[in-house]
Length: 119
Image 1 (cartoon, one colour):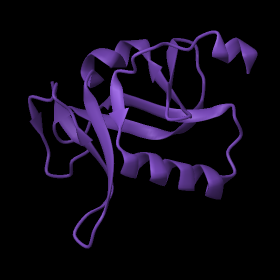
Image 2: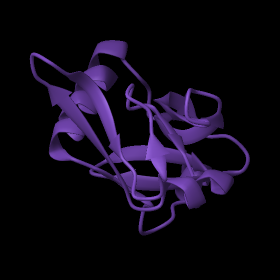
Image 3: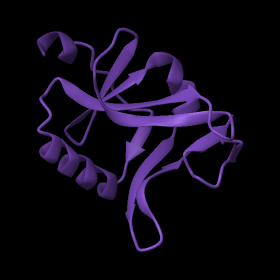
């Protein structure tokens, strides 16, 4: 873990709302995740609009940057930051919508599913 802490970057390119942080801590507790696990945020090709978001718990990989947001390790591949800079991740817990949402200022268009975008 010491080696990981040496890789911490300041000024995370993404923001987590209070609702997202609360839900992520619940997931971490339910899944009994160890300190080597962090929240992976990224993009991958595909989805109905060109790119899909990656959001899930994972271990640190070569090529990742490490950010700490409200005590949560966030892992992001360096190449993905350009697509995610300024993005806000929230968690909605309403009757119509339940789940993580992505507000990405870099998205030229988004799909109705809310997890796919073009840049």
